Image 1 (cartoon, rainbow, N blue to C red):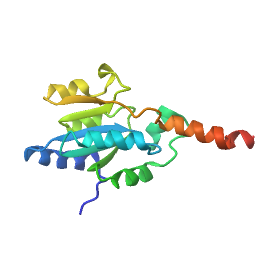
Image 2 (image 1 turned 180 degrees about the vertical axis):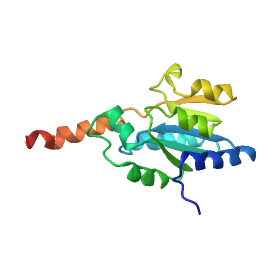
Image 3 (image 1 turned 90 degrees about the vertical axis):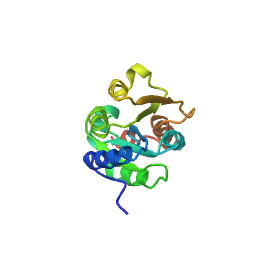
Length: 166
């Protein structure tokens, strides 16, 4: 069985084959720095919208640019392997930009999913997906679940080692 972790080009080929056989390809993306129950809920609900779920994750460099030098907590390979182990995820690929637009254009999903913390006008790729007849779905977030919140809780409970070793 082929790996769920693949290049954008390989995922695009597989997505096209699925679409040619009448199946619906769903795409979502994010850092997925520390996997939590909010992620699981969003991925499960995204997968329910179609026949295959593509999850594009930010590369390590992209995460650092977006979240700061202390992130990611888990490197790209570790994150990809963890996410590929989820039953609802069919494909995992990485992207190095600050947005997933290039991956969206290559893969051309039928449905683009983001968390509802993004307004529809803020969702990167929305206009492109809609231009080829696809749709965009904003899924409500699980309250109280965020990677940043988890990191802050850990630091408040156990201290910030960067502060104790200065």
